[in-house]
Image (cartoon, rainbow, N blue to C red):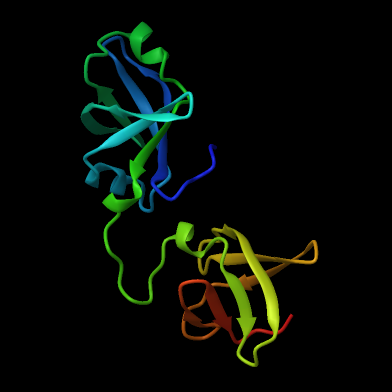
Length: 167
């Protein structure tokens, strides 16, 4: 995966071609996966620059999601996009409720205990099925803190997460 930046968000990748007419599987990184269909403008990374990707159509085929890119009408043409990453502009993300957060907004934040003790910095988030887990790093050591807003996570501000959790 390419590194995220503040302007673009990685939301999917193009999978293997489906059929002969320019369709391909799409691997959605949104939750739930069909949320990918809610966006209108998509971009591909080409040598460090984002270029618009015009998608004609999304569809579901069995357990898979597939897409048809405008102007690509054969298996050979769509094959060129296999494994390419698909981005959206960060500004196109929907606004969230006050106690909901995008992962991109949590990574890089400092973490402190309620008593002011510095715990570390969020370097990664793990999806576990129930509560997501913050991976916190301090002095080359990693700790895990469940992202349970209200119980463990007490406050999230611009650069700081306050927790009720001892390490």
